[in-house]
Image (cartoon, rainbow, N blue to C red; front, side):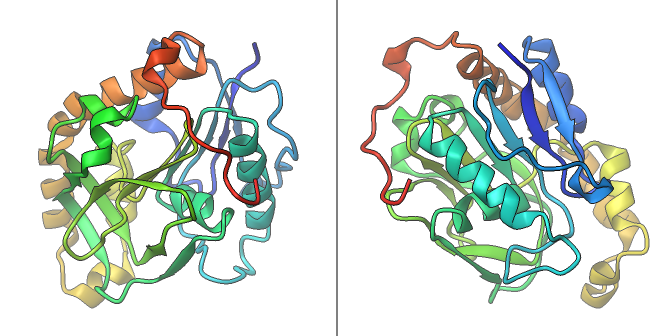
Amino acid sequence: MGSALVIENDPTDDLRRLGEWLAEAGLPIEVCRPYADDPVPADPAGRPAVIVLGGRPSAVGPDPAAGWLPAVEGLLRKAVRHRIPTLGIGLGAHLLATAHAGTVERSAAGPEIGPALVGKRDAAATDPLFRYVPLAPDVLQWHVDEITELPHGAVLLAASTHYPHQAFRLGDRAWGLQFHIECDRDMVSSWAAGSTLLTELRLPADVVVDACVEVLGDIEEVWQPFAVRFAALALGQLPDSDIPRTLPLLGS
């Protein structure tokens, strides 16, 4: 078995703590950095998993500064079609949605920044990863775009009042998370430093960073086991009874 393919879309958003959790669970990782001219693999065949991270590029329309995004969408379509365990975080979740005819737009509710709670939906009770997540887990948010329409056949797993599509599953092995679970203090500090968004919102950077750091322990308590189960799925260590069988997605 090869290494899990990680698409890093921005140097400020790497695997960080998520990478540590996956490594501890025994999942080997290979990172592709298209912003540094690494070519995006066209085919995920032979990979145990595909992970697409977040960052500053936008899935709302063509982004001239991130010309590789259509290739990432193509990669995600093949990963879902071939039932390769897949995880999209932030922008990665947006691309998972748009790759399958979902819709991403600038959020009408405005930016969502800092620590937050999301609420599990009923379908999460039988999901192989979300079934063990608490009813209202802590997460970190940092986005101005949101998924306004999920792909046909997607299962909504978590929501919040103003941003209804916080987590979803496509097929039986692909998940999208609007929020971030990978961050550590240094990552959040780098996002906050000189942020024009925080300035526009009149949010002091140090206050935002301190609020995020305060919940990092709670985030680890919830999302490290989630990452371990994703790694177990990728490594073929989850029993088939834990994986819901779904009909093929239209267009996949």
